[in-house]
Length: 298
Image: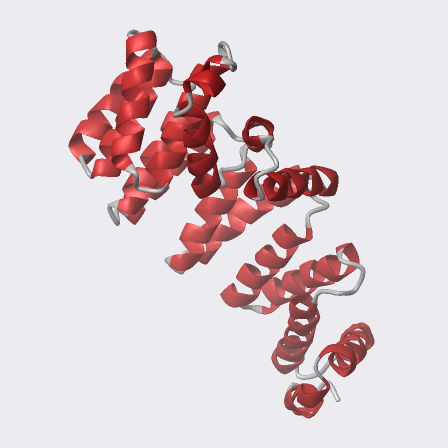
């Protein structure tokens, strides 16, 4: 995750380079360090350096790092000829490199040569089964081909090895939600909450999934996770506040009443929503009141 200081530094460098103030290499290095893409800018500023022999030679060994960075950016931007040229330079310098082989496979993928790309990725994984980048490329390729079930299969295989990859768990959860496989999605969010319990986004997503599944026990669980989202965000998550109101209303219908605890928490959520709407959307306050009345919150 990029800190505010790093984001500020990156923006400052980006503005400096865009306005002709120099610092292109420093900008590209920071983008790489922070593991960001910024593909269009990397392609533009990277080529500026690579096309200038003096600037390129001044990089020393980092020249090859820049060729790789620009090649990936070119693939992202569908500038396949640029990517091909960069990869050729790297092939000549590192003829037996598996890292360059990965770029070659990515170029095949970008061209839509799925069978050849799959063969290349399989070969690379035989040599190094723990290559996370290649494993995730197979997921991306399956999604690009519209093979969602294949993407699920590859993600599950990937997570058997790399269980700590939070982004992969989240991606899998979102695929499951898109297929209305809510129980499987809930499992993914449970894994994320266990490993990163202080991230409100995971609590909120889990609550949404559990609420969607329905049933008294799930509604009570969803209410708890909406409440934890509110707590983690300092009471400022509108979606979670609405979630609490929806849960308490649904629970009341299923139990033919509402206990004092539910009345209290729904009342607090409604009050927080009203305060938020008065400040940010006063014109919609009447709509909010009508909604809360329909849920029998007011």
